[in-house]
Amino acid sequence: MTAADQLAKVQRKISDAEQEAGRSAGAVKLVAVSKTFPAEAIEPVIDAGHRVFGENRVQEAHAKWPALKQSHPEIELHLIGPLQSNKTPEAVALFDVIETVDREKIAKSLAQEMQKQQRFPKLFVQVNTGAEPQKAGVAPNEAAGFVERCRHEHGLTIAGLMCIPPIAENPGPHFALLEKLARENEVAELSMGMSADFTTAIAFGATSVRIGSAIFGPRG
Ligand SMILES: *Cc1c(COP(=O)(O)O)cnc(C)c1O
Image 1 (cartoon, protein in one colour):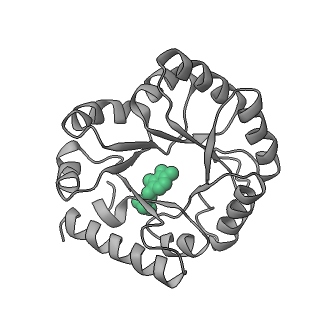
Image 2: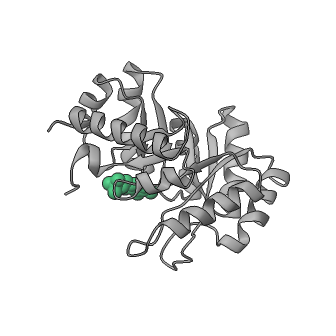
């Protein structure tokens, strides 16, 4: 199957999951995760009409996307991997959504850089729902305080929350926790669910799912 076929299959599964969960049609946005894949692998998915993509490294995205975006300016590019503060200028210039705001230093440098560039990507706070030491994200019990400081100390609008559940666990409780934190903190959007668990995430209220291998195939 081509990537365009896989894309169509994933889109059907998303529609089915929306319907099963009693969500409205089109409630869930598909972020096609193209990390590690070259422009030649991405172009057929763009040609199939898809416009929302995710990358996890600023440098890799910077090498691939300016040219792709030039031919399709309506493309919406999401940063879904950790952001280092020295990469903030590049990230603000290139990405339309930054899903991985997870510490004070990044919130501060994003606020400054956004003012400077007068470019305002949509921001999500990443929550480390499994409290895994190697994983980025704010601890669940620090999420409320962090969102509050982003809003009131840094003047940032927080559009959503994002999580990556621990790999070997049932993801449901993690999705439920993220949904609860979003509700309690009046955050509208929920980025959760990947190739292996996106239908579950949709049942728990995901408003966007980040899907790589189910579209582009296994990563090398
Ligand atoms: C790679 C990645 C994905 C996509 O993973 P698949 O299992 O290939 O769908 C989603 N979210 C993040 C944060 C990633 O790094």
